[in-house]
Length: 338
Image (cartoon, rainbow, N blue to C red; front, side, top):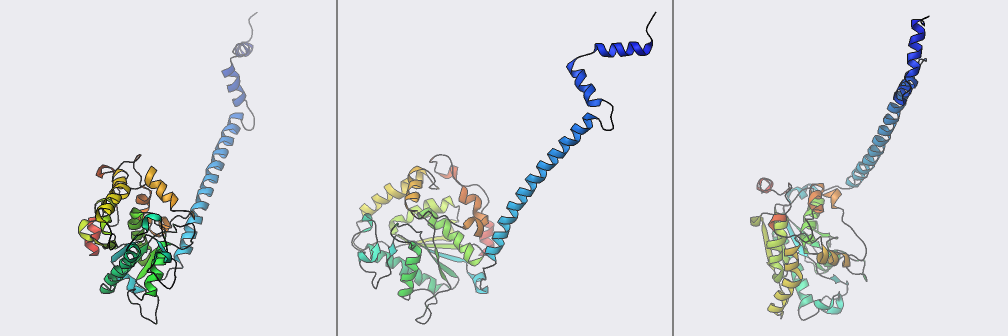
């Protein structure tokens, strides 16, 4: 006697015992809610939870950063007169004045051994005096002394000491005997070398005035002129016709020795490592940062963030490795501001 059709179907069903078939039967077994449905819903809920946690964490971090930035900017109240400032006068600092009654002698300064010699400290003063003279003649200028907290034996920055000396000598633009503070002179307190002197001072100008300069004048050693005009200016792609350099060297300085030292210790290293972010030049920055400081310009000059981070491959210099991104002082911007 043949089995009934229903029994035959049951027997055929039992014959198919593959693992794939058993899993499928388990997931699709009839119930109020199939096991497959439970699996799918659980998976969707898990993914949704993870996405929400990720979004919440990112949003909180972003909100915290934005909140802190807003709090920082809330303390800034720039006078309307700062809108007319467009000329950055930069003094790269080289040492720290101790703030004594004199600046004429080496004992009045914290000096490295190579900075000692006839006329060196007078050259520091002449840089201050010449730059202050320029700033007094140009009411649209901002005088910036640039130099970090480079000495382990002093918590003062090079820039602050230069500014105090300028105040004590009554040299600052708009300064009188009754008013020691000048509204057109400030400090940049984080630079550790000449490239950072230039870049960070531009960022400080932006931080101080709310906009970027359209002209730059550097007052420093004559033997360092090519380093600034040929290397640092080009590294920042600053227009050549909007950049001046005034050189003041120490009296009695041996010119050939000064130039040789500059070639070996400054110009050549920056030729090989344009942005100073590798080996020799990076180690110099580390040695000049005993107090472990870092700059605030990612926040106060966010337009420069990509440039501040720019570092080509290991010790690569030359125009082929210059920063290629947009800059606030691109030709069109400079022309408009001028």
